[in-house]
Image (tube, rainbow, N blue to C red; front, top):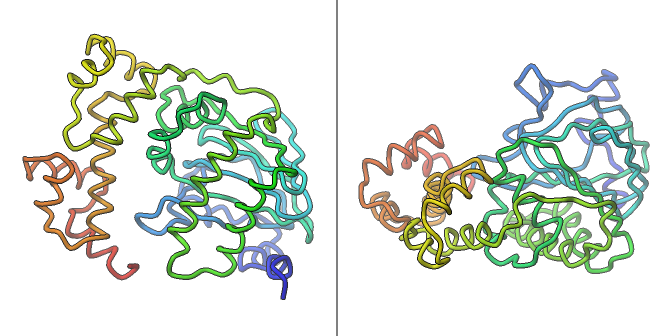
Length: 320
């Protein structure tokens, strides 16, 4: 059976759609407003999922609490993003941030669309090595760290770009034939896809004027990523030869977060990975990510993840 034949098979969601002839909103959100929630699809601790879009029914206006990428594997996809009608053809893709609303026309049997569900936190590590200014970089910076809540999307007419299509093909094969390494493989492929899309910016339809292209911000995020254990605003200001109060104001204005908040997010994300991937004592992990005060680490971890470090480790153990 070919990959396309597998993709044409009905999913449980599509069978439900054909039976009830409506979108079952409770499947996608627990909120009154139609905001699709990542936790309805992602396993605890996961940052990425790739799935097939449900066919045969109009999907009403909605937005997500994650960054979404729609890729047309076969056929086409018609949708209205914000106030703009977009008709994606086979091989094209669109990236939407978590603030943009869109509605999707019903797909026919032959229209196979792949949805990438990506937590904004996934892109933090990419910022440390994506050193080229461009619309995708600015879009991701705004989506992950932007405080303005402004809806944006990017439309890539990349059907003829072999390097991009090969990566997307591999990811589709991964979701149809998963194994124990699929999650890690998908993360690597998505990172490579972001790089390829950055290199192929000429396939971008229209233009995105990012507001966070300042070199200081990029270097600040790279510094936090690489030096999270001992990073300080004072050392950053010395590296950039700029007053710390000026950098503090810049970071807050353009990300909506303080230097301390961004650093804390990075440290806790690393701690979460270490809890799942190692048997190190929690106190050692706290020190490894930069916290000498274990009680403080315990407190902020529990506040962010709504459970203690040990409870988080035990909950993840069965999935591992």
